[in-house]
Amino acid sequence: MKAWMLGFCWFFLCACETEVTDFKTQNLSSAIVVYGEMSSQAGPYTVRLNYTSAYSPFDVTEFQGQVIPGADVKILDETGASVSLKEIQKGMYQTPATFKGLVGKKYKIRILTMNGKEIESSLDELKAPLPLSSFSYSFKNADKVENMRFDISASVQDKKGSEDYYLIKRQDFVQFLTTCPEPPPPPAPVPSCDCKCWQAPQNTQPILLTDFLLDGTSIPLPLKSVDYHDLTDVVIQLNFYTVSKDAYTFWKRQEEQRTLGGGLFDKVPAQIIGNLRSVNDPGQQVIGYFLVGGLHRQRLTIDRYHGIPEEAFKKLGFYVDFYNIRYKDYALWDCRKASWIPFNLGLSLPTL
Image (cartoon, rainbow, N blue to C red; front, side, top):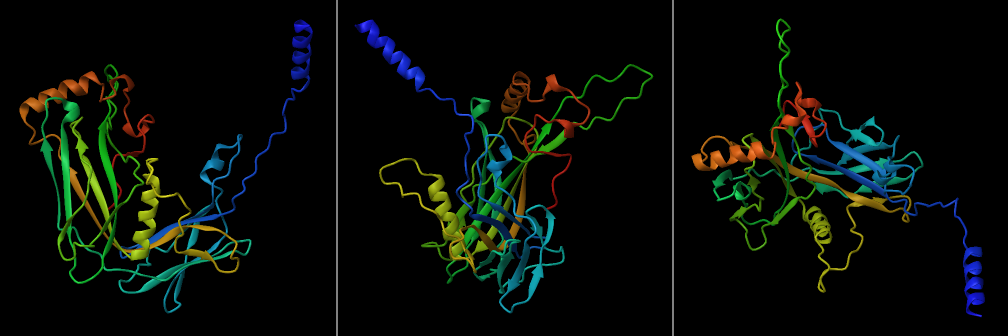
């Protein structure tokens, strides 16, 4: 009896098995994503348009979002004067290099897609840029190379009597060296060896500051330190924006959701509304923010060779050799071809 029942169950389970060969997914979100900014610095300014990420098991590019080509994109001021952006590649639009935002004026972006969607941002005043009042570094020694570091400090002198908001984008540029191959035997000429290049590790998290309770004081910037770990230079670039309260609030909410830790008192995740809307289709979702801000750029070069205690320098030499920091197993004549280096910029830094 038991054997008969087991056999019946096995037959029943096998009979119910069906191979799925036509599995399909559908991207249910048609939200338009707008990313762009303009500042008091000389252009060109760039705006990127795409739909939210789709899903396809056969096309990994779908995760990046479908681009929106052929749109009519303009930046307008409060008088109605406009400048058109040229599509430099699919979904990427750019102003003429001669166009520059003027402090005190208000600007917005207007987009008309090929399928008739009209998108517009709210007018936002271009604030006057504020320079950093200090920007420096100091070496902190330790017993182990892994704990040696350079502490970075910067501050801004806030204007008294006004409500001010700041957004800071940090980009580090890290120099690296590769090992040159053995030269060919004479009389063959020795090729020139370009072994010193730069990389720019990606950083997408802004630093946000407000002068609430700090009006008119020197406000320090919370900057992460730089590890010692090598002798090559490090250049830290800060893009310091003076922005509106709305822009600050948008990015603040983004950061609050990004850093949710799963705690009982965490804020409930929700869609964050920016300064963009669909003019002729209220049901069309538009995600993103068109940033208008006064911009001050500044770079700081960290010399990781001079001014280091001799004992720390010796420890670093052993560390570099032991961990193959020079990529001695991948010798090549031109470091620009070092494909194993992420975000390899080549021989020089971009213009400030």
